[in-house]
Each structure stands twice: as C-alpha cells, then as structure tokens.
Length: 236
Image (cartoon, rainbow, N blue to C red; front, side, top):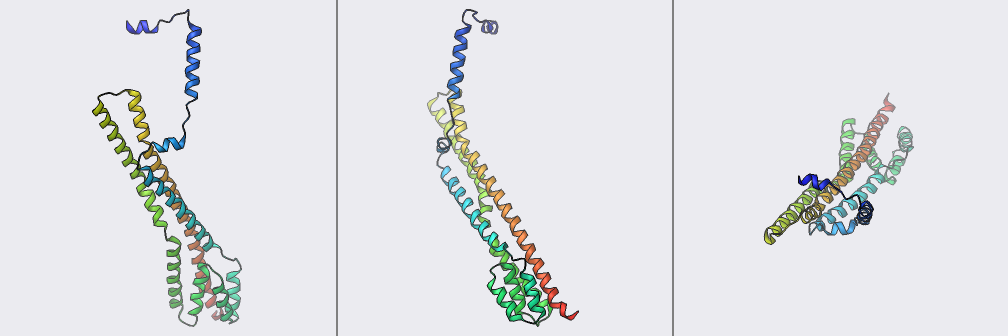
C-alpha cells in the first residue's frame, strides 16, 4: 500500500516538479571534479606515489635519450670499415671506429685490435664488449621495474588504511549516512587508482625501452657477423 501511495502524483503541480527537477539537474551539472583537489584527499601515501611517478618519468626519458644515442649508426660505417680492412689500412679503420661514439663502433674497434688472432678469439672479444654495451643501455631500467611493481601495492595500502580510518570513525561516533560512507570510500580509493595508473605507465615505459634495446642489440649482432665475414673475405 505504501508503494501505491508513493506513486500517486498531484496533477496540479507538474510545473513545480519540473522546475525542481531542472534546478536539481543544474546543481548536479555544476559539480566538477578538480584533479588536484581529488589527489589531495588521497592521504599521506600520495607522497611516495608522487615520488615514484617522478622517478619513473625521469629514468624513462634518461634511458630513452641514452638508447636513442646508442642506436644512431651511420649506414656507411661498415662499408668504410670493410674498404679499409680489405686494403690493409687497419690504422684508418681503427681511427674511424674510435671517433664514432656508439656500441657498434666500440665492438668493431675491439675486433680490429684482435686482427691477426684466430676468428674464435676475435668473436669472443667482440661478444664481451657487446655484453658490456648492453649492460650500459639496460642500466637504471630496474628503477622502472621497481616502480611498476610497488606502485599498485602502495595504492592498495593507502586504500586499506583509509577504509580502516573510515570505519573507525563510524564506530567511534556511532553516526553514519550512505552519503558519508560513499564519500569516504571514493576518496580512499584515490590511492588505488593513482598506484595502478603509475604502475601501468612504468610498465609500458619499461617494455618500450626494452624493445628499443633489442633493436640496437640486433644491429650490434649484424655488425659483428659482417665484420667477421670481412676478415675472412681476403682468404676466399
């Protein structure tokens, strides 16, 4: 019976209801979400999350610049090295390799230093230099790995602390409303959202940089194989 009476409307006041509904809609439309205000409600754990975000951004661009610099290879480099080696002008070949600042040139320079030894020894020396160059490119990538691993954990931890605080306050005061609970929950989940976003960005950046390193490593391997072929070419 109560439902029936709740559904009965007064036909004499449709205009008033319309005005009230429009005013309510307008008031709701005026409510905007300010990102900075929202983040400020995340609690103390937003500070370490902010530091993790800064670290991720800094080391991503630092590694990106270093890897891009390492991947710059003159397409004519190996042709010039080949001409000098074939003509026996190893001094000119080494001079060019030393004056070219990239991993491929340093690997070739090590190979030129070992000219006259067995091919296996030359290849082994070049591989060792290649491993060092890969290590240089991968340096500090562990920071991004750390960020995408622990940022979501910090986020969930902040949410748990916030929920504990919310229910403690409800238990202490003995007063609560659905609006109060909803408001407390959504503000406490800010840390979870921030942690997941930071972790996702760090994960994408980490894998992107690894893909760039793989491309450079492939060029290093191609240059090594080409150089070893050049050394055997005069004997064919």
